[in-house]
Length: 72
Picture (cartoon, rainbow, N blue to C red):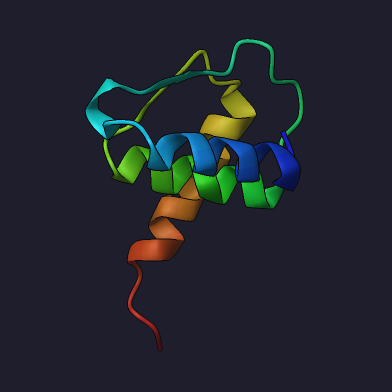
């Protein structure tokens, strides 16, 4: 999952009700940082992310922690 995938998903999500969207990542084997940040933001907006590889799930959690930390 790379930036071009993220761009297409963002376009799709704009047109849909967020509470009805589920992103199934069962076929994802690799994700770049842009994709992980997108997934973290999507979850924050109420979009469900299922079948997420464990390394991606850990990275999403880290991105969320970074996003909530106060700037120094």
